[in-house]
Structures are given as structure tokens and as C-alpha cells.
Image (cartoon, rainbow, N blue to C red):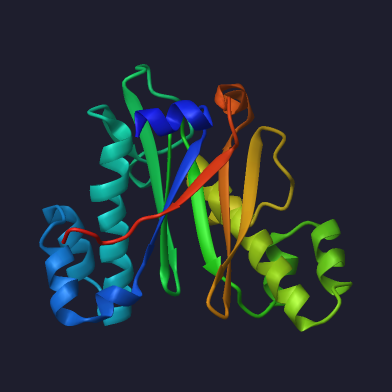
Length: 226
């Protein structure tokens, strides 16, 4: 991992895991057994099996991706902290999880980071007018066709959600229409078979100087050697 980091520079690492293999009950159990007690409970609390698969895939990313990146450093979950302040130690890494459809994703960095991944969904202008600024709503209304409109809506939503997860403001942040001057966002369009997803990562502009390579490095995390 460290040799790879030297080649890429300091960037935000993104790990993605596929939920489809987990739909096999026996394989699901083999991955589930390797997770922490907290992560197993999160999956157990979900009623739908597909949702449990998403949760277990996210837990697998912590087990195989975050811990490898951390190299023994303290790992801080963005879901368990409030606000966007940096920790006082250099021996800390931050991670954030998201899942949608058949993909789970995790962002890991040496500074606070928020991530959201969403499978492209139908544009809902009633939601857009509540959450997006006037310029974004105009772009949605001027989109050429339902497919382009749906992709733009999904991308804009992931921007909102990733910012909310970075700051810890949740719905209050999502409903705020003004654009933040203090937050950077980077989005990627991801294809999985015939499905399209958008993934967006948010981080503070003051941490941009720490990125010495490409902004995002995306890796598919498999279930090898299980």
C-alpha cells in the first residue's frame, strides 16, 4: 500500500465493493463472520436481505480497505463525529461509507472527508427546488431528455449528501441552497453493467494542499482469499 501511495502521491482513496456475491447466503455468512461485532449488529438490525448485503459490503471495506490504508494509525469514522474539525494528531485517518444499489463505497484520507454514492434515479423537480440552487434547477429543466436529467439530478444529490456527511449537518445541510466557499467536491460517473452511479467526495478547501497527486484513487475491493 505504501509503495502505491508513493507513486500516486497523497490522494483520497476510494474502495468499492460489489454486493452481488453476498446474495449467496453461504458466502454472505463467510464475510459476515469476519466483521466486527458492531458491523454485524448493523447488518442484523436491517430487515431486508439486500440492505444487509449492502451493510456487510461496507463492513468488508473497513476490514480490508481502511485498516490496510491506516497502517496502524487511529481510524475515525465520519459517521461517529460531529463537525468538520481536524484531529490534533498526524497519526489519524478518516473514513466515510456509502452504499446504493449493488455497490458500497468508502473514502479514506488523512483529513475529514464525506462520500456519497447513488444509483441514477429519476429526477424529482419538487426535491430539486427544495435542495438545489436556482442555477442547478435551471440546468435540470434544460437537460436534453429524461436520462440526462436523471444523471444530473443524481450527481447534484451526491454533492449535497457528501457535503452533509463531511460537516455532520445532515438534512439541514441538504436543505441549504447556497454553495459553500469552503468545501471542495469531486464527482465520478461509474458504470456497472447497464447501471450508472455517481460518486462524490467532499473535503475542506484548506486540505486541498495536502493532495500531491490525483484527487481520487478508486479501487475495486474483492473478496479474494475468503
